[in-house]
Amino acid sequence: MEVVKTKYNETELVSLLRQRSQQVFSYLYDNYSGALHSIILNIVGEEELANDVLQEVFVKIWRQIDSYDSSKGRLFTWMLNIARNASIDTVRSKSFQNSRQNRELTEDVYASGGSSETRTDQIGLRKLVHGLKEEYKVLIELSYFQGYTQDEISKMLSIPLGTVKTRLRTALIQLRDVIKP
Image 1 (cartoon, rainbow, N blue to C red):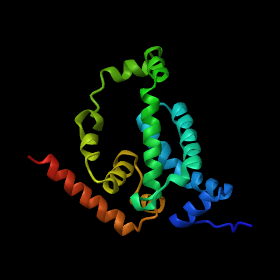
Image 2: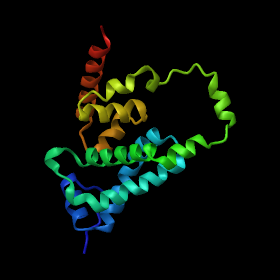
Image 3: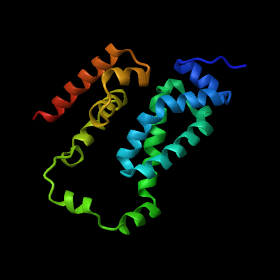
């Protein structure tokens, strides 16, 4: 019989997932789906499609948990990579490309046509962020692009709050050094 817990450490999570614990899988979904959904939505750009990709991602996590290697990184980073790769695969698929070409023009298209809003993608900031170490990149993504607080990130990634703050500060210093001529 499984013990009902409100919090698991990473080792317990992986071990119980490998034992095919439905309860722990539900816990994993409840605690990580929000962050993964934000990342997926950011890549695919459509809510309904992001929900579909998220479901696909959790199926992959369930099926591939035995391939997770803790010596190569944290569980969340492994899941994030699955989510990012699935999102990119979706965007590159022919059906996605065709659906984008066949969309009706909506008022949103006309409204954003003359927009002077500066997007981080257009100024290359995201590209600079992706040049950082994975541990910094994830924190910048969650904090600045997804809008999570440092406390939320700390809980989400099971990292002490002080570590989150230190890594974010280090990441921002590295970005500043890259941006400065």
